[in-house]
Structure formats: C-alpha cells, structure tokens
Length: 139
Image 1: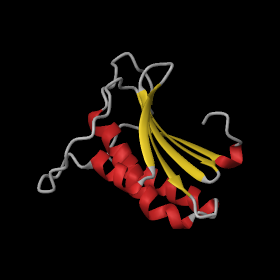
Image 2: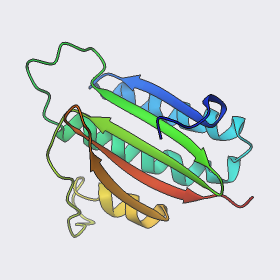
Image 3: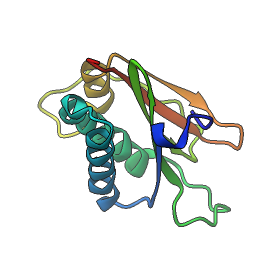
Image 4: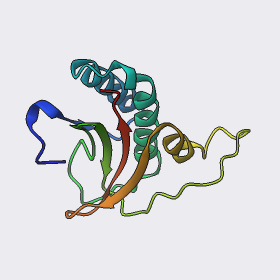
C-alpha cells in the first residue's frame, strides 16, 4: 500500500479521540469522490467509522509513544479495488464477535465484514497492526 502512486493513495494521521471518526469519514468521502467512486461512499464511510472507532476505543497506546497521531487512515485505489486500512499501535488481534443487536457495542467487525468484500489485519514492522477492508469498484 505504501508504494501506490500518490494519485491513488491518501493517508491521514488521526488522534485517539472520538472526533477522529468524523475526520476519517470526511477524508474517505472526499477521496472516493475525487477518484470518481461515489458509489462506494456509503459502505466505505460506514466501515471506516467502525475501524477508527475500534482503534480509538480498544487500541492500547504505549506510554512510550510520543506521537499525537498514533492512528493512521490509509486509502489505496488498486483497480478494480479500493482498500482502506486503519493502523494503530496495539498488537491486539481484532476478533469478530457474534453480534448482539440489543447492545450498543460489539458489532463493529460484523459491520466491516458485511459491507466490504473482504477484511483482515496485518502486523506492522514497527509494532501495532493495520486492520483493512477491501471494496470492489464498479468500473
């Protein structure tokens, strides 16, 4: 993902704060519209909301980390797909739970799985992980 041409990639550092979810949705929406992929906007913004919420809520931030932006949103267009990923400093493996539709929590990865073509996670060389979701474009 890091070697994609600049015109086909967007990176946005985020702080571990609730308002970062809105920022991530806005960046995702504007990036997809700029790429002419507005048809992906609704599903992708829903998924990115869940991934950033999980990163803000559940990621363990090492005390040694001296950065204001420990979460990073990345969007990459690799035709015929778009991949969005959210990196955070936690090494904890994301685990999909059976959704409890009465509870306010616990449905995040179920939503990611439902609205994306595929999802997964990868450990990062510098520690932490990136949780990603892939969408197929119509073009």
